[in-house]
Image 1 (cartoon, rainbow, N blue to C red):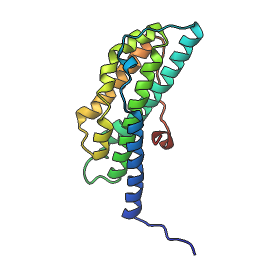
Image 2: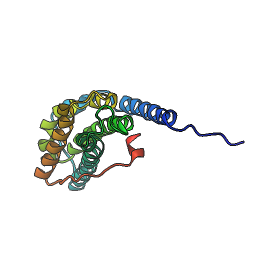
Image 3: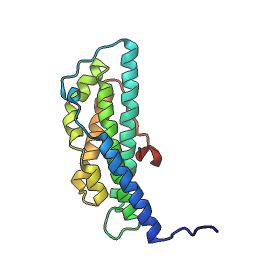
Image 4: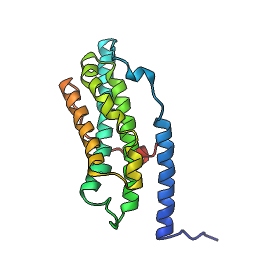
Length: 183
């Protein structure tokens, strides 16, 4: 005998619960302070290693930029996060996941930048701004994010793109899939 699938608010609640759990697991996995990340960048390596570092930087920063625009900035500007907006709960959960994902990818990009001398110097001043994004994913998910919070994500992404461009590593937005956001 086939089971009936819940519809309406119950199904949306289940989806929101599953995505919230994924967000908590993702942010827990992203946590922890890496002592080496706070030190002065000392890039070393061959030309090939430097090229690979730039490639990885571009990929990670591009994913962070794409997630930020697609699931945080764009829905915020469209009014999807406002109380009473259609699809608000799901949009907030996605924004929370995107916030945690973008933070994680930006931290990875700063680590990648250490493999290239010019890129490491360009990105090093941005680490404090990236660190400030750590808890914004939770604020977004809870619906507590303000214009300033959304602007903080946008500003950091712009700064990372500019730093990459100045070091010859042009970053373009790459929207991650929903499954990539979940971990």
